[in-house]
Amino acid sequence: PKIAKRFIDHVFMLKLLDLFDSEDPRERDYLKTILHRIYGKFMPLRSFIRKAIQNLFFKIIYESDTHNGIAELLEILGSIINGFALPVKEEHQVMLEKSLIPLHKVRTLNSFHQQLAYCMAQYAEKDPRLAPLILHGTLRLWPATNTPKEVLFLNEVEEILELTQPPEFVKIQDRLFRRISKCIMSPHFQVAERVLFLWNNDYIVKLINSNRQVLFPIVVGALYKNSKHHWNSTVHGLTYNVLKLLMEADPTLFDECSAKHRDGGNQDPADDEERKKKWDKLATLFTEKTGKPAPGMPKPTGAGG
Image 1 (cartoon, rainbow, N blue to C red):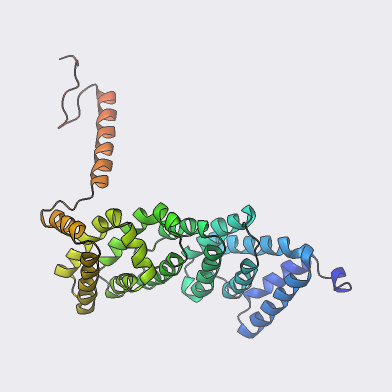
Image 2 (image 1 turned 30 degrees about the horizontal axis):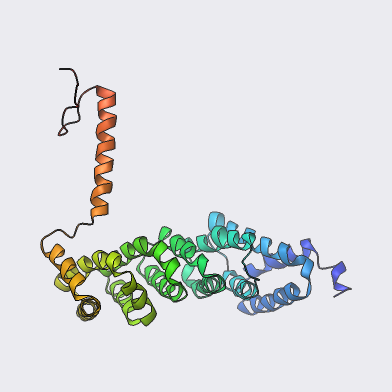
């Protein structure tokens, strides 16, 4: 290492990282081993290597969208994250938030998702308080029309939920289960099937049942719609199994949610409130601009005729 220090500097590391874009998997595999050993033996270069990898990811996310060596670089990062000391430093959290989570939107995600999901899991395992950050980021980048990618996201969500502690789950439960509810009603059977498999996970079922007052009303309507309208028989079977689990967990609450759905009152009150606020804001803006009450709104008290 003493002799090598003269040659292995910042310029050398940048050139080594550039080689990761090689199309030959054997070359990338050797590069992975070399970079890992340099990181292990040259302590002063560690921070620079992490930042250089982070900058490379920025280029992939915001400029080029393709790179042959993402999977190998993420493998190295996975072992680096595994060695992070607790509590996780702010710079490592910034790397997670600014460069790793945005990798989910790269077009070629399926070629490196396994390694990326491993990095996410390592962060959540190191510090469970980071789980809501990871799940929020995943939901923000959720694919709307790409079914294979949606299935990958659901796989990752299950993996992160297994590492999420109850206090952290409460922070993300509402937004997460609104997305899960949409996935349950997905016309694509693979998405609906994958999301319903979440109820096969005992730990996730425990989290759901512990917060059932909030979560049951969100999912019961979607499950009932599936049971009546979904075209796929496997999804039908899984839907009925989940409905049965919910009914056994809390019969009284389940009956309340079912009654609301049957009466057409399964519209979420929070959605109604949000919609009312938007209409009120529009009406106020209209009145301020024209001096007249908005159509369909009552005339302001004390307004001149």
